[in-house]
Length: 327
Image (cartoon, rainbow, N blue to C red; front, side, top):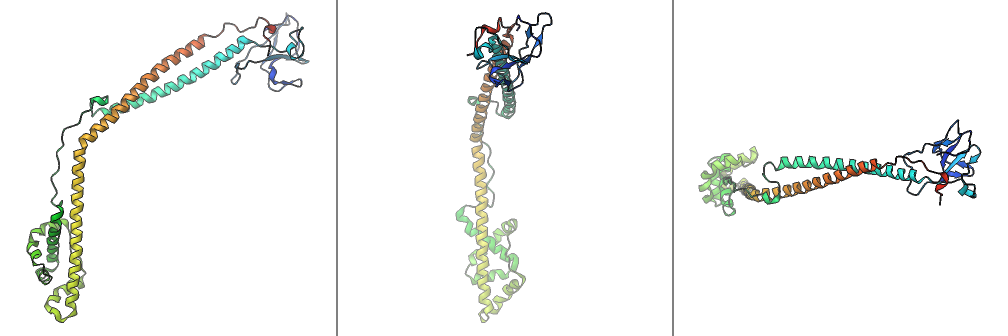
């Protein structure tokens, strides 16, 4: 910008809103270059970050003696203030370019994340040979494991547990154990214990009285009812046998439950894998659609940035300082 009059000294271009009590509250927007031949003032219009032309910028030229009047017919602030609408438009354009560039950067990051998600999903879907839920198929029936020998039906657990515990007593007392089963009227259990000896050893289940109790168990039947030792030992035999049978029944129940759960898991696998395939392919489809949409948005955003960059004015010099008044 230039004026026909000659000026000397230092002159600044400032925002009139920052001018109070004869001083500028902020640093000048631009310092004047003075043409040595004509004395004309020329200011380079700045484009600093944070300066926006959204509300319009009212400008003043201030020298060492204060504001320079640019309208002789005006009075008050109107004789000093002016606007450069081309410069304000350029500020708005540059702000739009910056915002559009930031949005483009965000879309680039979003596109990269979507591509990574697509790659990961394709690796996971490799075993399904499917890309959309409609392509998922339920696999064939899987083979089931045989029933374990200790997965015993509930009605058989009690008798088998009794025989296992009888085998455990024989391991501890030898033939003497049969005497106790006769005393407690469970001879029928003793008759079946031999068939469960192998199971008892496999289950690694043993009757566990201490050494003194074992000695008492071996002599008590011989002493008969003449001694209190006899009744106490018989009671102890009943208690240990009851504990043994309870624990063996529990072991049968736990093994049966484990096997039944394994069967259920295997039987559910085809359907579960179908549902997993459907979930994964649905996510893959949504991610693919999101990627396609992001790519489209990014192309439009890049085109917008290019248009905004190319829309810069070839010149932002005002025809006259007085051509645009501040409100």
